[in-house]
Length: 139
Image 1 (cartoon, rainbow, N blue to C red):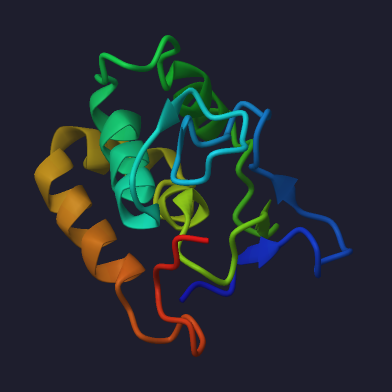
Image 2: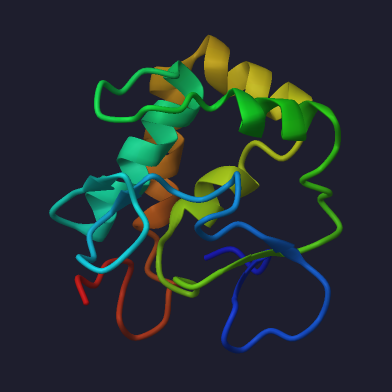
């Protein structure tokens, strides 16, 4: 998977924290004890719903819009030189989605063609190079 998404427990250098409760935090989670707004069944569903919400701005269960994330991207806050720091890596997570839209033109392309973006994310998070656990684990 992506070397630009690092685990918070193991990474001690500079990076951009994208976990909850930051503005970049995923409002969807498959784990019961989180700050997420919406509980879903699987890690895969949490990642894909985040990707869809990010580029379409629509999900009836989410109170906030992705506009703060969009503004951060457009203002260069997701600097491509710094890794994204979360708690999930190396497993598939919303950080891998954010990594695909770190530049304004990437975000604009994803918003213009959300179906193609979601297909690309689906392929990316199912890659076998996520370690011996694979892309998804529900625990």
